[in-house]
Length: 378
Image (cartoon, rainbow, N blue to C red; front, top):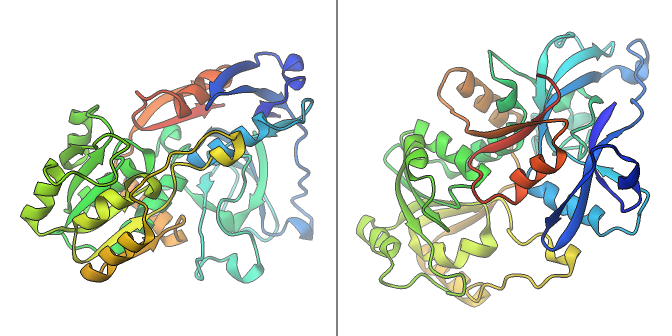
């Protein structure tokens, strides 16, 4: 069976169609490899809660970038590392304990995290992302880590749905917003923020954005972004007092909430823009890779603990960390998409003869807008 893999220097020579791209100053060799199919016996008690799947398409997320770079700098010249964290799959077979899925059903991964209602929580199954190797064409995974796709969701949407949808719905849920609230969304071009924008707009929340550029103005507006502000130069510790976003925050009495995928970039700039008892929620860091590549990381002079704590205390503010979401979050996102309430932007679709183009668009092309996926199925 096929799988998309990051290849060692020697391994790439034996892989037809292997290619190289440059990521953060590192040569990354990539190609589709043939690997053995996992054993599965649908009559065995050991397979009771398991499902055999055929992957139709998959996507990479920001978290995959670190896994890719770790293999690229590895001394394992003859080795390879299979990647992919989102996927859409067709059920091939089910174990004897699975009675609610059947061959032919389409499913996506359930990345539930710290979810006491999750059916696998009591049995000690792995929480979070079920597999870091989502491009393996044939997989065997626990039933509890899968959700059936309701309605006619397109494969190219489903292939990159789970992580961003589950995260976005979790963050919005935890903010407990009202329809008349105003929310500031950072990095609105990022995948997670696009999903959050669609969710917030459906709730009637007014959303403003803070971006690094002014691209895709019409597309963002069509998704519900009411105003968009552009960041100052990266070396600025705080937003200048005459920045238009500072003026807007002052005019509205501060934002009720801020959703920020990259706290090490935006936190010191945006925290003072919250209104009294406002909430700031973040799901990640931009700089996850310098420890792997040895490059010099980006330093934000505004990340001063005393200043940030002072801002929190004076404003009675809350900072919330968010990792993925619950099963209910992902199910709600699926249901809303099926009902037409949750649009998902797809950027480009690649196929299994385009490994380097897929990764380059996913991680290097600043023109990307929406999810990028790679499909096995036509």
